[in-house]
Length: 444
Image (cartoon, rainbow, N blue to C red; front, side, top):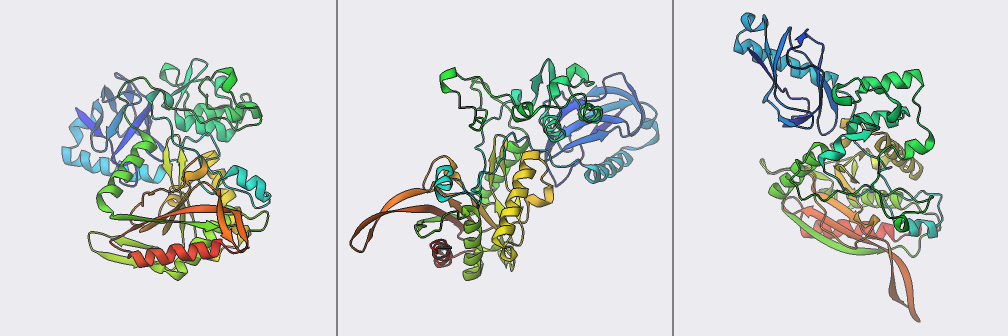
């Protein structure tokens, strides 16, 4: 017998979820033929058959999470007589290296734009109504049911749904070749090439089924569709995919960082109409990093070492129904307001199409979030190591302020700054926030 163990599918991830088996027990298989599709936090990887043989046992079904290094499939055949256990382990290592090189593009299951920010050309009134700065939709669903959505009796995994959305394919019209009516990525690509299953504009906007609501509560036709909510069924559900990675990151942050938060408001009453809120926030972060470089830094808690970084790469937190993602805007200190807007549009498009490359979601030097898209004034946002600071913007509001001769209502942005107190002093954090506020309160 020969047991093939799940190799590291990239970036040291500890496990992966079975999306679809391409073989079954009793099959005679050949080396390099498709064996199984595995979904990690960031990609769907097709794992090939490692050698010729007969499939003896499958160690999991679609939807199961397999730990890296755990048994995945068992074979019987000539291979077991030709290689020792040590040689098999070596082959598994080689297979892992090959899989990392051939991993498909990042596929995150997002059904909305994922980034709610205010376009520069919008008037101030419209900008206030949106209340948005940079962050997208709130996370909602972690049920197994959501990972394999039904389309007319056929099933599609998150990665397949995203591919169909990107290629403008109506999944209900795609012929499913996977076992149990599962639509495979190759089915979607074939349908796209034939042009016989093109989705209409309406179908594209509703590719992710939304929960049924009473007619009286449905949004107006022009409103953005509501994010699907988690379904309460009183059952324990395995946390998978991106949400699983998010849980690990949050747990690590809680265990390793010494967080402290300070809050204040920026009075933006002097802003000219049409100001780009996202652009102004990013510019203020750059100004603050120049005033207090200690917050634009990385910290190694094991070595007690700090690296203050000369460029400003801002990680923009995006909440989705599958968990938290942080795409990065690089070298913000060199960008003009127009270039910031263009970069934001690129991020929006990549999130919408689930096409953000893995390298664009790491190595940020500062973090920016906005929990106030829906509600909230102040918060204690979580820092992702090795960063030492994150700024969060609350919901824009009007505050009554004293002025010469009376009182006025001014628009304000509530700001929350969390910093790692191992690497940053309270004075440095306060001066950083003060520099942000000073820049935000300028008229333009």
